[in-house]
Amino acid sequence: MNKTTKGALAAGVAAVLLTGGAGTLAFWSDGDTIATPDLSSGGLDIVQTACPDWTLDGDGGAGGLLGAREIVPGDTLTRTCTYDIVAEGDHFEATLNLDQGLLSTDVNGLEDELVLDADFTLDGLPVGLPPVVGEVVVPGAPTTFYDGTYTLTAVLTADFPYGVEDNGSQDLSVTLEDIAVTLTQTDNHP
Image 1: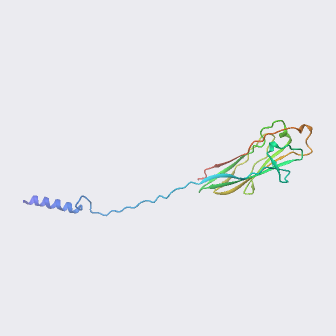
Image 2 (image 1 turned 135 degrees about the vertical axis):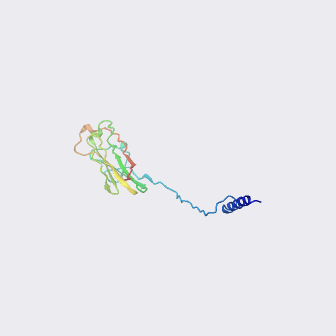
Image 3 (image 1 turned 30 degrees about the vertical axis):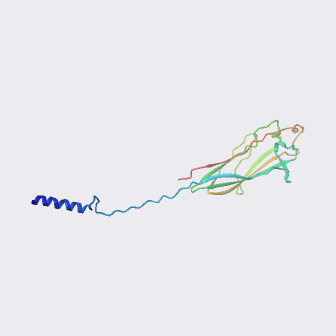
């Protein structure tokens, strides 16, 4: 063999030895993974926990459905309903809106004789719901709350005052609308 061929052959063997023989390179390598934990979303829930029938004059007597009652001047019907609100989530924020729908459909004049009211508390603190003006329902200011558990209480009253009525207040009816309680999640991110 001539010198050039021997040199070329030696160079080829050296190249194979440097690359590790079977085409791999002669350097170290390592790897790892980025852990990706499971993600969970929060939630918003309102559940009625109690809403017994109307009581008559606060004596605990069953008032039944208001439309089935034949009330007289001096009577007051009351109904108290409670709700649990569960708000879950980091950065959670929501507003509570109450649409006071009690004064809505006057069948034939009883609405003008009654004083209808709905008072709300959230964890015992009054919710800012302004009074009804005439037959126009004024929406209340929303209440903002955050991650946690709350109790909403609604006290509904239908008062037929004594001493301001006349004979024209006999044999009248009124249909009361439901009160809408809405919880709406808002964005409190900066």
